[in-house]
Image (tube, helix red, strand yellow):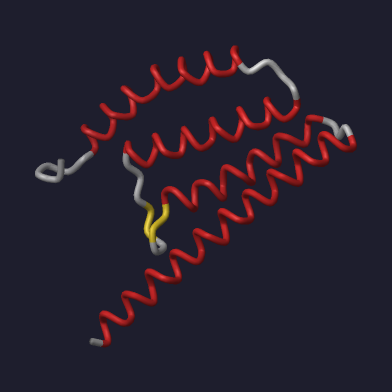
Length: 128
């Protein structure tokens, strides 16, 4: 009974951490977009914002209860969310989106088969 309670507490704590990271990522992104539109801030500030968003997104997607879990499915989810963030930025700032979408598709087509092969090779025998 005590182990179940401890496990539920651990799951709740992990869920709260993910929710806090998600809210923080959304807040940082919205502040950046607002500042870009309202004050015409230098676009060089996108790099640190992107790094912070990437770190938060990594914690949300790849870490469960303090344990790193990197799989192809989680990598696809990470890639799609990261691509959506960049596309939203382009849309909000009025940049052309079609070349960006072409690049996102091309990078996905090239990288995910490589990641799939790498995951299959690095998986322990019997754990496919």
